[in-house]
Length: 180
Image (cartoon, helix red, strand yellow):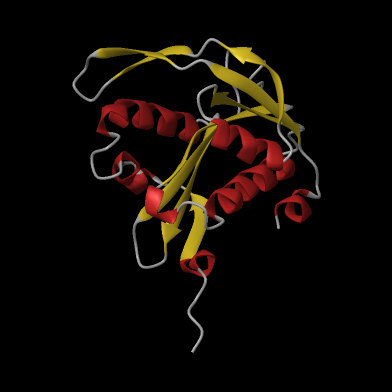
């Protein structure tokens, strides 16, 4: 009997409010609890999306956030350009096509919403992610200082410095052909 491919055991879907706790990945990302709640409020307001990869037997194993509109219009302007961020797959499930599939789902959704460009930032210290995005048509278009802040689950302001490459891709109705 053939063993099922991991992709066949995973559902790719937009998140709901009940998924917020699971985005903390068993406490590893608990410090983002308030940030996740804020992002979900943007989902409810039509300004963002949260995509998840979920094992059919239960449990989130991947996530990808999309900002549809932002006060930083070079990232997301609500009409032409959307910003992808917070993209991660749990380590035991990497290199099995899940990242490609969740990215494909998000890009296809953006095409259906008539967005033309997807933007993202990738850490300058993450060459594997840089190559991943380049393989799927993203091109470096600039740099990003990577300074941002958030309030953690304990109410403390956290400052983050993540210098990054800004990348962009012109979306196409042929996105499925590019990622298969």
